[in-house]
Image 1 (cartoon, rainbow, N blue to C red):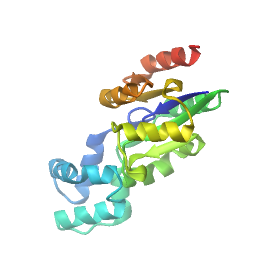
Image 2: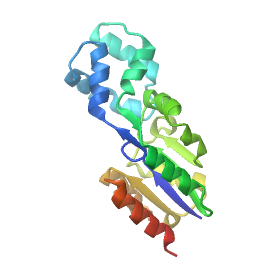
Image 3: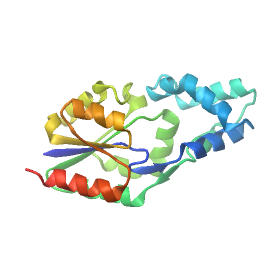
Length: 199
């Protein structure tokens, strides 16, 4: 058995952080830079689940002095996420191969998870999905990779991790996993297929 562990944003889905910042900031009629400053304050709490979507929405409403509706906030905060049809189809095709299991490990937050649950139903098809806010761990913490390996019941040498962050891939490699720093599927897919084909 071999396992392919994918990051989510900019790997299996397109993600434009600037669109998310601009769309969300517009709800409170503040510049995106003001929202980026807030994200610096609460980003870690969002990422490990100490702050859920309702808490974050309330925090922003208090900080910017304007109450807004929750559903438009979720839509705005998810505006930068778009499906990558080809990437998702490829991941599903890997999941269908004998002897291959597919998992997702993503640094994310409750608001984005709610959006992804609607946008990417394919997540239900994978053998393991670990969202940082749901497990209280975030990459590149080795513990998140160790937890995934334990749940998949696989050794590091049986797994490969694909992420657009070099630091996250380095953390996986340090545990003995193979790794690919993803920039383009034209490069990533041949590398991944070569690893899968290797004895």
